[in-house]
Image: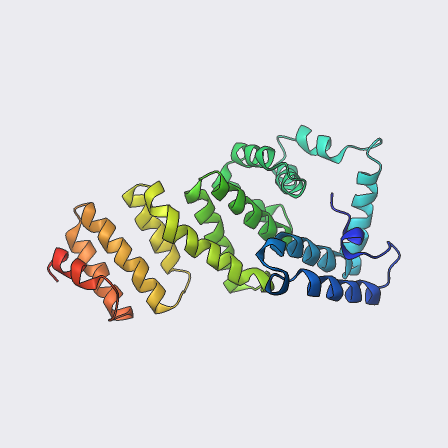
Length: 258
C-alpha cells in the first residue's frame, strides 16, 4: 500500500494547508507537461494521495487502513484479499492493490477470473480508484497485446470522463491512448464484425467530425472486404458529410461506385 504521506513529503500530522502546499510543489515537479510523459504514473499517484489526504473522512479511513498495512506481522492485507476469492468487492480491491504494487500479472489473473470486461468493478471501488484501476489495467493489457480489452476499458474511461471529469491532467492522455490503439493496432487484432462494433462504440463518444470521418472510412473499408457493399456505401457517405476533404476518398468511392 502506498504511503501517501511519503509521496507528498509531509508528516502524518501535517495540516491541510501543509498537504495542499506540498501537493502543489510536487505537481510542478512531476507534471507531464514539464517533466515529460514518463512521470505520468507518478503524477497519478500524487493526485490520488492529495485527493485522499485533503478530505478529512477519506484521510481518516486511509490512516486506519495504512496502520493495518504497517503492522504486517499482525495483519496481512494482501493475504486477506487473496483468501476472499468468493467476495467480488474484495477481489476488485485485490486487483487494484496488485496493480499499485507492480504485481500486474497477478492482477490480470484475478480480473480475468472475476469475468474480465464483465467484472463490474465500479460497484466495489470508489469512483476515483475505479478509474485509476481501469487506466492501469488498459496499459497492462496493451503491453500484452490484448488490444480489444484495452480498447473497451479506455472507451469506458473516456465516456465516464465526458460525463463527469476526474482525470483532469490525464484526460488528453487517455484519449490519445485510445486513438493510438485504434490507429495502430486494433483492426489487425480482431475480426471484421468486432472491429465494426468497436468503431460504433468509438463514434458514440463524441470526437471531432474529422476524426469520426476517418474511423467511418475505416469501417466502410472493412465492410467492403466483408462483402457488405451497401452498408459500406452508406457509412462512407456519412463520413464524407463529416469531412468532404477526407483523404483516400476517391479510391474508396471508385471501389464502392458511389
